[in-house]
Image (tube, rainbow, N blue to C red):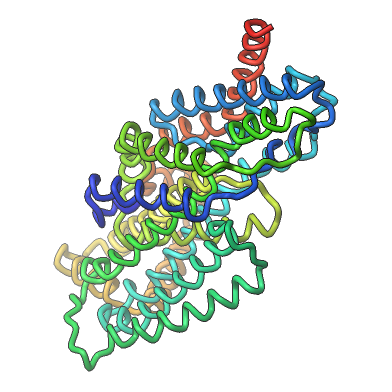
Length: 453
């Protein structure tokens, strides 16, 4: 979504890359073992028999599929993980009552609703602000890009290598220290290669403008999108086909309900084909929602979102929070949008302050000042803003403003760059995902049991 919104990729190419990477993630690095009771939601010992357990998982599979299709067709980017958790919870309650549920896990899930998108938004906004400080707020943007792009791409390599080892490559289990060590080695190699690519002696033409610098983020952004798709396929396909794997394993064993189930290759293949088919059907609409409708994105902003998604998943996984990559990526887009609003509002307030304090200033003089401000270093900009704030404070002391007056002034300068209706719609879809899929699963369990009995 962010890569298409930033115009780094045309829609058809994004769908193709996502489909290939998602299927590859499912087949190459798909989970070998899936917990039949996702995250310890349901205690299998409390289920009456294997037949009831099969009905439970079948109801959960149908309910999660139904809810995901309803929400996605409406353009709401909801979580597969949370849908499966809610469905297993609802079917488990219907099959064995409240005694079968591990309620402490539900607290973590509710916490993740809030923590994961907020964390993703904060990291994306912070990373974008750092990029602006290092590159776009400088006079020599091309020179700054040559110096810092190798470090940025190396950081991306470190983050994604660590991310894939921890969350994507389930065929090879590794701990955090090993993942960090391998990530550091890959980052060092990428840094050397990238620095050679952008070395001044190579006379690589870089336009000294924000547009010119943005073009340098296109290739890293495409790689980041592909890697995120690979890791997403390796995890979410396993989540989606988990109930089916549990059903197959239980039917074959018949003696008792196993705590875990091997996922047959044909099940992973079916899941991979399903996710590619879903991309073809629902991908364009969802990509437009995430990439263009929430806020305007360029390659640098989209790169910040991709980095935030990977970093947040790493942090959250180490904290043991069952987070959703969907929630984190969308939270990152919101974070970037709200940062843009904050910066634009401050900028508008500054220009208005100049015009108000220097009424004799001509338009040409104002344009010259704005030009000087935009080309100033980060430190010089801070000094200009401090001087303006000092003048504003003196004026407010001479003419005191009430709280209502201050609030009115803020609303005058405020620029909305994030569509509020989408914020409400997406947040509502996130909140009701677990209850909706749980209710559907409970109803389907009773229907299936009634028909099959």
